[in-house]
Length: 151
Image (cartoon, rainbow, N blue to C red; front, top):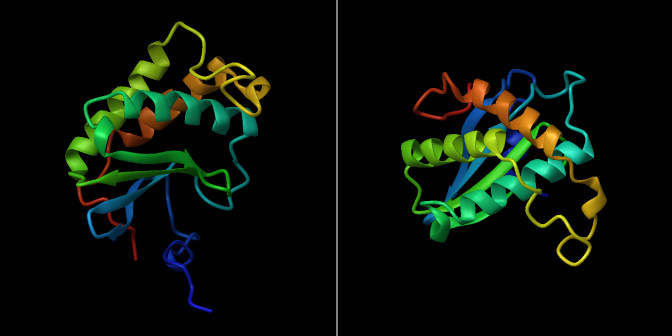
């Protein structure tokens, strides 16, 4: 069985940040790593779910909306994947930071927060989304423009 690309990254040295995970034609997959892997600090379900609702909505309605294919949590609970068509790394980073800042400043109800809109809407928590967005913004302050994994 061929090893998938994300399993070839050395998770013992990976730090929080934003990385280009892979490029498939015109689609770039970004690894938005919010926590150091295997360090015991993982996102809980409410945090992952809430950030996903906020950022998926904000990104798809933002300046790159037509290019956003997917935003969602990693199963390991240490970050998120963002898939973008025809991506420019600097532009994607700027738009992501804007969506994170908008989440921190948000004062309404989490997008998609009803039984009709979400299959598990009771696990949405705006305070946790805001806290995670602020944490992620801090992580992204000093991102290397190359967004390459360390060897």
